[in-house]
Image 1 (cartoon, rainbow, N blue to C red):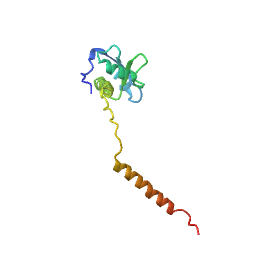
Image 2 (cartoon, rainbow, N blue to C red):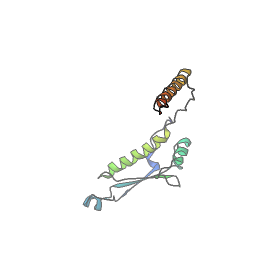
Image 3 (cartoon, rainbow, N blue to C red):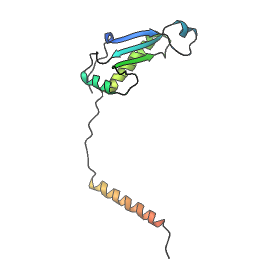
Image 4 (cartoon, rainbow, N blue to C red):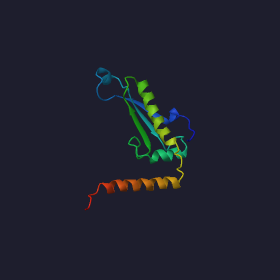
Length: 134
């Protein structure tokens, strides 16, 4: 795993917009939804993370390398801002985990014998289901 500090807030552009959908008067008069924009290429993230983020096939990442997240699940701007930042952190954390390389192994002699014995037993069961010739 790559050691990483949280994303600096000066690299994240947050703007308040009107939320969509149900919510009545509150939705109509209050700009509580948050649009988060984060430019991957201009960020201070390590190069490895930048390349991994840009390689993702995530619809939140544009062709220019800008992450766009819209949060409108809560009634207040503060909660939506925190939710958007948490989603950005989760996205970056998802690429910061390095998968352990698989070590190729060979089957043991005992496992090969068990497999062959199992095949023989299954074949005998199937042979027992055949029509008997007189």
